[in-house]
Image (cartoon, rainbow, N blue to C red; front, top):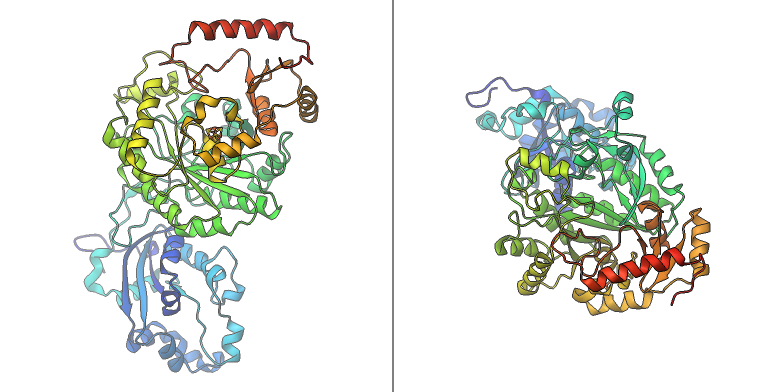
Length: 598
Ligand code: SF4
């Protein structure tokens, strides 16, 4: 058989999927196609009313085994299939039959692992079937091997449909693209999405990593961050990996095996059960890439099995399926937030993924299925000339209509990513005014808020990630931003109440206890809404901040009114602010370690 005008079919890349009547009647079709979409491209999905002749031909090999099985095969097949609806589809990828056989698991659901379709969703067992003299219901069939794929196609689709068997694009031969076209949705843009199974990074490549990239656990403002997987093929033009010379690592690799990474996270000096917010795989890859996702879930299950109820932040822009949501909703302790990066930028040099509907579809899937999992639309980066026009703003806001919160922020204007984007011909604003903090000018902040107010959506809007996450889980902000009251003008009353009630200025003795507990040392000065420290370094400051739920500031990197956590591009410090800063410096240098707040 050849596809219209094409080459002979490579049957090692095809599998026929049959979702059996028990799968259809239990309404598992969508969830199981989502699982399958993680390992092969799915196409040609259609419902068929199964005839007796078809199913007898399909299971012709069973008839000679009737005595051995101890079942009336014809009666069994009639009972399960004849005149009932099934769903057929094509799976396409390198080694598609083997991949799908591994995914569906063995015939007997009772013998199948929880990471297989039959193990997860099967409710019948071979033992029960044998005892009752019947064939079992096990949800799904996929072609055993390339020969079976050829036979199955002829039976369920027929030679007249050979045009469906188009060869894989060349890049699919080496990278597994799994974005399925189904349910009448348009085929999205294709991306290389990395291997389906990750390898450990070769020693030479590991040794050449920037020291910051090589750190597996780092403390960041939104939480203690685990990054034992490095490499991303999604090519976002403003990616922070530019800063550490890592943008060219397109293939995700493990730095250490995942169980070891979990130990490193929970064994970190600053990790505290219930208290420490956790971020997973947010530095150097996308956690929902096909090869990365199993590790993400492995970490989540490991934390959950330990009974940890810490907040866990997962940032993605990639495919989140109904099956993923089911998996997340099964967790019993960890409090997960999915943050979907969605900027509305349509220039593919800046946002290659924007050509597809992947992110918006993932947001819709997650919002439709969330319960204990929370969903935040992460509106970033907002950049003048890229995505600040009214139509784009209202489009992004509409995408967040069903989310628990929307968080907006600006763009990291650093030489490395600006240089990359300019080399592609992209107009980058802000000139040479590079800064360690993100840029979001005051007037742009005001326009974002005006657009949100005009949109009519009821999703609350926040300037800070931790505020959006905390509000979604109905707890006080773990970064203590209540101490920076100008951030709170857009916050819902209920959340203001929580933050107000939860915010407590630490006494000096308390600060000393936390420093001693963490093993850190600094002079400090407790001020209104924050504690000034000096030379602790960012990671230690955040560890103290999350322990106390109170802002910990660095004397050499002060925050100014209305520009909290932002670069001063687009802000003018007032004369009074300058004077206040000078006064703080003077007080700090004269302060004894146990200086009283005044
Ligand atoms: S009240 Fe203020 S600190 Fe609390 S979540 Fe709202 S904006 Fe953040």
